[in-house]
Figure 1 (spheres, helix red, strand yellow):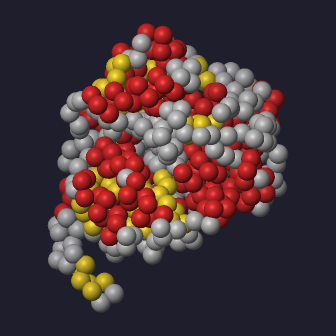
Figure 2 (cartoon, helix red, strand yellow; figure 1 turned 90 degrees about the horizontal axis):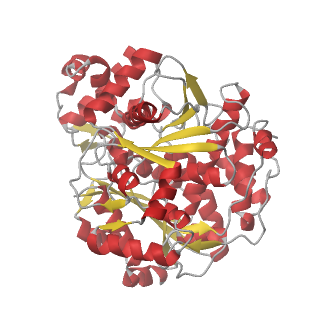
Figure 3 (tube, one colour; figure 1 turned 60 degrees about the vertical axis):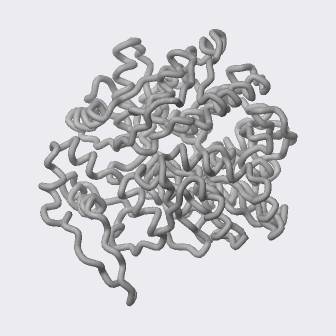
Length: 542
């Protein structure tokens, strides 16, 4: 391990730090137990009893460390029961493993030429080219430590809207004592995202397409956690369910690190004066990524406003403007599929904080959401939300326009999710005139969405022109002595477009996407949402 990693935390919390449920009806637990459980027994989400605070000097010292050192320093207070050496080993495996295509792990790139200078936090340099890698390269090591202490094995249940699934599969593949089952909406992820998942190798990994949208998959996973009969049958075999979604604290906490890291790097390169406030712009659907930024502010990071960027499924925008959360609305499939969500699970954690940690009130809101599909917060809570958060959204035309405009202004190519963030940040500037520097979460590689990017940059006919006859579906191919069904034509077009996009942009394909079209399809299971318990039982031989 590099000397950069072997550092002490700049701020310490009491060794007895424990985790409580947002719904207040579960006993407080230690950090590794919160990781092992994933979801609190009362259906709530685990949050730390308190947040460690860093002063300006402590934040400044982070600038002298590499990314692993920063992660160790910031996460030590949250995982005291793992111990410094144990956490250091986990951090080393996650971030010093050679799986990142940039030595800084999460670099920040400040660009001029657009409406104003912005700092892009590049979160796409991990093995699956999306921000979920930051948490999901560390979580397996935290969970393994928790399981070893219990003498148990874990079955990881994941609902994905695109990127979490592949990142979780890559993180847990081959990890002893675990099996992972990923559910994705059959028609709700990009062809590249789907191909990444269904070609994932590993004896302990399973991938299932759900005939519905992401909310159907996510609701199905939550029902699996609440299924006491299924849990008892699993426990009789020495196993239990856990989660790799951002409802698991072990997945969410590592995301706090990159906001501190981007800030201190921005100070080091002169883009932000030391101690100055920045705004943070995040494209989000399940609210985990922007919540991590909020927690960074709770720990002392100088943040002014959080700009919450949504796509056409703008339930969060409406909530932040009115205080009414209403999932009773049309669900749209968009070019930014990781944000195609109407039930934002991590919002519950923010509500817990802005309601003064009133778990009874949180339970009431969540009960209303379950019964009616909506809830309304009162004026005091809405005022506290709007003090920190501003919401906006981009439709499909605006998303493509942002990709094109930003590329023309800066030469930088955005993926559709980050393009949503850039468009919404433009709205924010027009409406507020806020001149504070802005850090924008660049959440995925543009190569994961080649058709959208090509059409945005070169027009509606760009895909056909770029791929020529490559989109014609060939017959079944033979691989390793067996016939493999041909891909559907849209998938072939998109995969063929990867190489052409790389050539035209003059950028190499990320390692995680190279040869994607040649990998054999290993997972073909599909089910209706109501059949998810049966599928899980069959996979686990229960």
